Image (cartoon, rainbow, N blue to C red):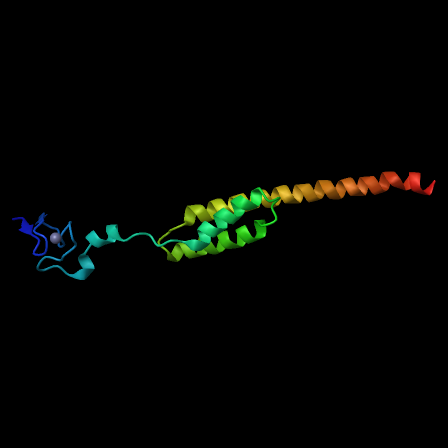
Amino acid sequence: MAKFCTNCGQEIPDGNRACTNCGTLVDGGSPVTTTVNVNNVQNPTNGFAIAGFIISLVSLFCCGTLDWLGLIFSIIGLVKAKSLNGSGKGLAIAGIIISCIGLIILIIFFAIGGLASIFESYSSVPSVRY
Ligand SMILES: [Zn+2]
């Protein structure tokens, strides 16, 4: 007892309440039970996640100077992903991981630089004073 779409003529299998081709509801169908259109809805773009990921990535090549910005954007992107059907979640997480790696590298560099300057001033004290 297959039906045919009143809009485009596509055969509609038993049990389907909407045309698989154009989404037109067949008689007896209600908008609530339409599952056809759900698959056609494109995931909204998560601008913050994309921006966070790109900034974090660029920052890796800019001595980590933009890491804090990439981290902030990525976190906002991750929060927004929840309300955007999960869109951009992977990008946001990747952005956070990349920013964290960049920040750790930055901290290590500062630590080495700081230790080096402490050691330098310590070792230079005798030569200056005596
Ligand atoms: Zn149709």
